[in-house]
Image (cartoon, rainbow, N blue to C red; front, side, top):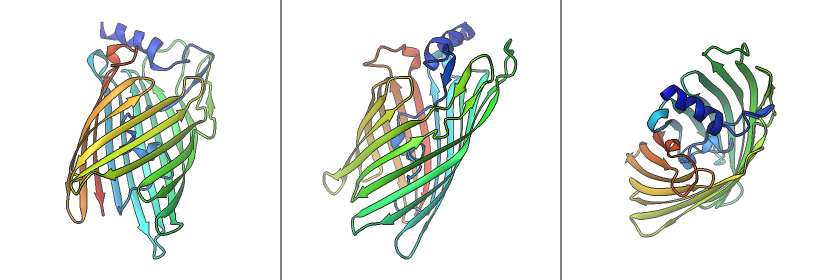
Length: 290
């Protein structure tokens, strides 16, 4: 029964365009994109960090727990005497689209942040890597595995705690023909903004938004807001136009030299006309060395 449900899910819901001659490849984006900004913009640099380590996992609920995505990232940051910051990051991810299909990706990323004034900074970044897909089942079409180059670039303007960014992803428009049709990692774009306000000495309000200009499928926007107590406990929600609403909580363990973040996010199809089995859970852990 689970295999039949998986086939129905794969054909009708997983990727708009799989039944077309040209199919668009695009990575899964976590609803908690704000704690995975390196996936949104190659110019992302974490604030007040020397080392940044993250691991994030997302899986479907119900019959489709084998539909899952895992991403791991490690960054080293260097601050110069002129207050410019250099970041080198390595990222690896794997999106499992059921028991037979895996889509590994890997990237190396360089970003530079320079001060333009006392409260204004500009960050730019580039990333290069690969996109691949591995099919372990039996296929009448023959070998449908592929390996493609990929690249992205972006910029972020910071004014105090306000940030505005723009990024281009899958810039190479790489193509593969693993079977009768064609797969294309078609270019798409992100525009994002974020800010935060101090409500009092203990409470902080964060708010952010992301607009995704996507190929062949409707553009998507995400807007979110959260409240944090002493930067250690937070709750919030995110609305995602193409899938529904998310509720999350976040915990932080702080010291003078480092910080550990743990996040839990539930993505619900509530408010959207999508099947309930597309609900999912996201779990994340991060470590920052100041």
